[in-house]
Image (cartoon, rainbow, N blue to C red; front, side, top):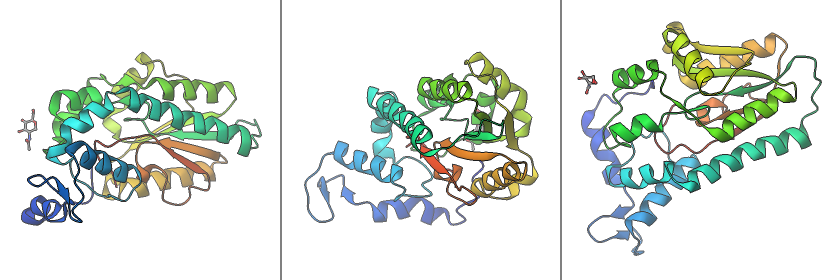
Length: 255
Ligand SMILES: *[C@@H]1O[C@H](CO)[C@@H](O)[C@H](O)[C@H]1NC(C)=O
């Protein structure tokens, strides 16, 4: 996913996480001596990813790949996702004074926000090994992402309220036609803008690229009321000036 951060010291990258792990697989105890199960350990890892306490992780820890795989295919993942999109509508109804002049806007990510990449991870493992970006992009090019139904419902609800929908994705520009096909085939249409990463955008972090794209939209007169994404980098750099809503994604981290 075009991460700027790279580890030059292979040794550090592979062994630091073990050194800092707070659970010992042999004794099944935390550092303080609390007896816990692998499930406790992995749920705590997942929760702290979503809380943004754990950052810049390269891959899901090997001992938790089964747990994370189960979570993203579970009813709980669906419930968590539905709740996130419902909160978007609560916010829109209670805190946004829409002007309905064609300049009210909402921003969405694409991967694991509108289209699920879980089918890819299902076939290639939920971590343990670093993502093969070539292989992953080949998969994106095939347009096999599946609709995330609660995001699709929100997308359509916003559209019906006259909100302009802008997609800002870290996908590269060359994937534009495959992306449009995948979105349309999954039921998404009627967006007002689709912003993808040019080669120049790849020189900066995803957070900065997305912030610059928002700046441009604001300069063009859009009022961005909210953002729905699966990464903190989707909304945590200024100008956010609105609320960001995060969908669960314990599979990877994009800075
Ligand atoms: C990534 O996947 C491609 C195609 O499956 C393969 O040829 C390549 O060797 C892989 N790269 C790495 C670093 O594993």
